Length: 256
Image (cartoon, rainbow, N blue to C red):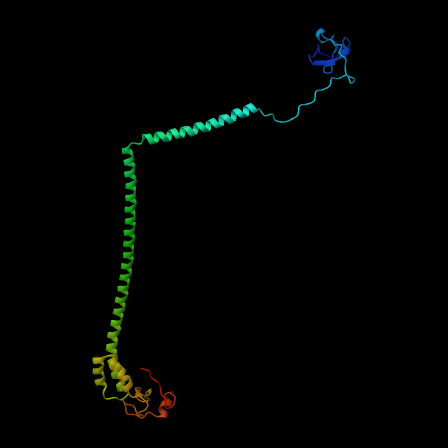
């Protein structure tokens, strides 16, 4: 049995064996001496027999684990089911009130709103289609304008080329006929003004076919096969062509 008491010097709580009652001891804290008091009357040691070890047997510990309260689980489950049932009932009541609260006028207004939305969609679709048609027409018009511009420019270029060739071809035929010693140069000019390309093609086949060389005396162009210059009458010989640095019997080729 233990005797609880306090040190009279430092008031430290002490607990000593009951067998030391009445003895003088020193405080472990302040080293002050004191007399251990007797055990209280209500705490006198009982005459109960002790175990051989002098200690009471400890009760075995309870097994560890979680204890489920079946009643609490049942109450929770019933509460959850009741809450779900109440929610479904409230939803049904709200839906029913909505159906009851819709009057024929409201239904007509809703139907009119839906019809108006459909009409608006159709109008938007038509407007989009018309806009697409207009865009395609504008693109085609742009392409057409570009084509017209291209052909117009091409026509102008061809016309200018025709006018220049109409003026140049008679001049060319006259000068070439003089170089080749043809007395019909004026006639070819008139024919070229009258028939244009037809006269030019006929002239290319009708003129004397020979190389055009450069005369070594008058420095004018003339044809080789005549062996004399049509301008000064000088003979075109191999020596003259050699003096000019030309190949013998060929002279300087001239391509009109």
